[in-house]
Image (cartoon, rainbow, N blue to C red):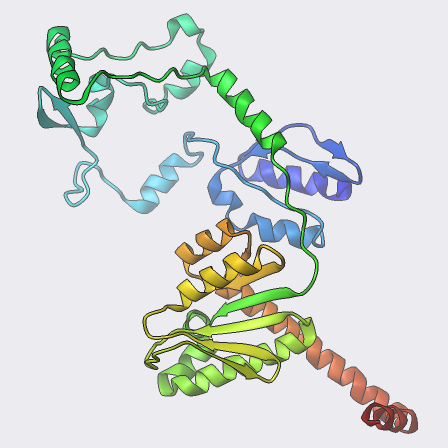
Length: 353
């Protein structure tokens, strides 16, 4: 929304980023720019908050740039590349079929392929310098005759080498933009919203349920089922709670109906992750699907299926918010019954009929 653009631009500048002038798009405004990942990690939820759900943040990888507070970050980490024996910063180069180690600060002297990343202090100089003054890449030190001999041996064994013609970068980017424009954007599906919950992941991610699980895992499962039953009654979505065969071996999967939610117990050879991924793939074709889990790999897979991911921490906050709204609604009902006892009794009798 236009009224939030100033806040967004200020936030981006505070993160150490930059942005282009805002572009109006009907009632909304598009703001394009870049900022360090450190400042954008949780900024999507912040955008949703201060735009009241109307704003959206989409991020794409742009590249690497020098850290703004490099000295402070290095001092805080205390990393010394010269003393790291387990994960040394040196690189391994190959020459005439043998490998040799090159210290981290001498890599640029041995490189024969440009990486696009230069030593500290050279990035900004290269940006401001003309093309003719750019630092030339170091040429390959192997003999040309050896290269031809190796190629001849390869072709005698595997056949002639077919080289692919690479498109210039500008032409390649234009092609990808045209391809993206041709792709049809899938409309948001209507109908019931599905929420799949990774049961044990949530139990061991929420402190209160984890504490109960130490004494009795069955009790923790029951508490989570009750919480989700209340949640479903208020949100009116289809809730599917999935437990894998963790300490409960099963030969076949089992689906039970607990009040107003579905509870799935997978078979012994199937994990909850696998069941959720399979179900998400099918449901997301027709319905809006969310998955509550903090499993990083599972989150990436369900995003690829077109579902929305909700971390255990965010889902806990959402559950607390719904619990507060339910309590407030019950308080209003009680207050109404006290102030209008006859009308309340009449309405209850009418519902029973």
